[in-house]
Amino acid sequence: MSTMQATAPKDAATLRTHAVIGWVVTAIGTTTFHLLHLYSAIGQVALLSNGQDQDHDHDHGAEHADGAEHADHLDFYASVAEHNSGESWQLAIFLTLMVLPPLIGILLSGKVSAITMTVVGQVYSIGMSLDGFGHGFGEGAWSTLMLTVVAILLPAAVSTVKSIQWFRATAASGRGGQDSSPPRT
Image 1 (cartoon, rainbow, N blue to C red):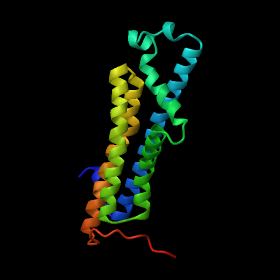
Image 2: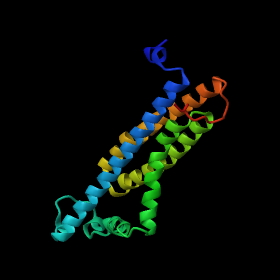
Image 3: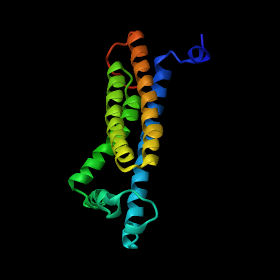
Image 4: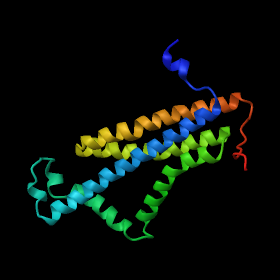
């Protein structure tokens, strides 16, 4: 038997804690990905305002040289400034989805909670990962691709495994599929 198996937690409460922490780490990774996007957009604005976009010193192809590739990002960020725009709501909903999995795990403890936490966490993780792969492969943004794999996909995979283990431990403990809130004091 390996050391990993010998020390693996078996009780539902420990697995629940691991799943919550895993989804928090995934949310932090996704936030880091958003920061990279923001820094990239700020850099693009700086290049455009200095008139350096056409002659900056690395070659990304003709489409990037005229700024068209980043124009969509800049337009998106500009429309988020309008508080009730579709883009603002899209971003608000996405950011809310990042917070829900850990909250579900903190507030509820049944099988349905483990399933819901996993599904919601996977929705935002997969969505953001697709965006990361689009930038990584489509634009040659290899740092974005690396960040996507390490900061989003890896923690999401670990979180999913821990959530499934929590589900199985909860089912095995005989509590059934009912969610229960922690006892009030």
